[in-house]
Image 1 (spheres, rainbow, N blue to C red):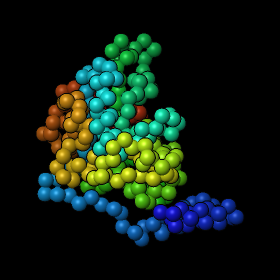
Image 2 (tube, helix red, strand yellow):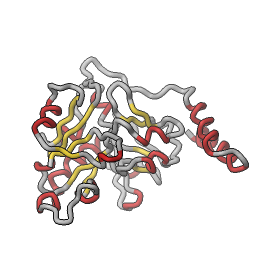
Image 3 (cartoon, helix red, strand yellow):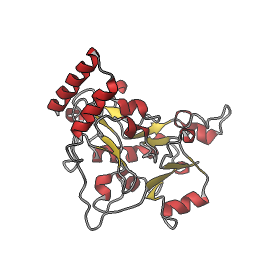
Image 4 (cartoon, rainbow, N blue to C red):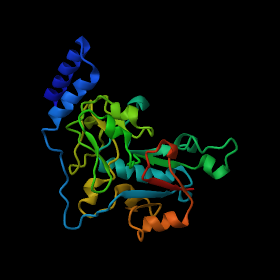
Length: 261
């Protein structure tokens, strides 16, 4: 990891003397491609899909207390640290106000329930993810088999280009070593280190062994997860029979998270 960082800094230094940033990043990316991506071995009971998606029924949440168990389940499963400093906070799934989650849909005179309801937000696992296009080392990539936007923490050099490209604020940066701030370490999922970006991975490691995402299991039916390309799936039935919205649809990213409002 540190050798890779030093290599990047060396190339960046060369660029400052006369080269542009693009060939520098291209050179580093080419070097990184020599190493295979870390993959997840799928068991016989693995859950599979052509494109995973999620429907969050916001009508089943009345207050922040209703979504706290969901956030806790996700963060405990994935060793997300608790950091008091909001500027350094790491989060995979969190509560957001409607006006912030859906800025293009907010009304001057909003209905009372929507105005005060808590909205869960997370990585949207977009069909056209801008974060993947800007990563110089391919540390973040879209898994072609099921559309999950994944991260290889070992490849991440902490440039934060993906954070700048994500229009949803779904990525967090580790400004310090997060491991001392993890209340109870889950040894079945890797911890991260200082200088690494992280985000929701749709619980790819749980899908590989036949389990639903942690947030879905903790939601008591408020979150449904399934294959968007399977017409007979539960998620498609929900989309057929309910009015749903997505975050910043006009950007063309095609989010995989839908909200029943």
